[in-house]
Length: 174
Image (tube, rainbow, N blue to C red):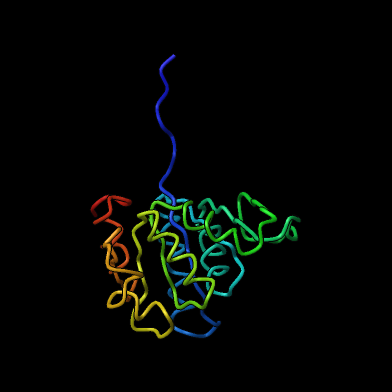
């Protein structure tokens, strides 16, 4: 019996931003946008920004895969459709880098830098939020190295993010 692929596109949400910041609000809007377009959101839900992206994706009826560092299941109110407790600590950053067809980068700290470098090494497109502060602001002008492994497609608002996702073929033209 012939089968057809049913895998939906997947986009990882990496980074950090605090509640009340523009980056935090855009992370939530990004989660909802991805869900509305049938894109599975991959989020560790460990920072406020990645958690709000997952919450808004779930609220919009989308699927969320949460890859978490410990080996135990999170509480029942965890904002995810599927939870993968990997028990790998920081090594789980490789799973995050590989789990998406592309990676949104919002703000970020050392863990985000690690995930971005791994995504770059494995040729995943990077979509950094710019204009809201944080490490993602510097990514377009300072890629991880000179190899040009993948596109770096900055965005500053939801319309620009949608345009970049169209360029990658992850959402259809309007």
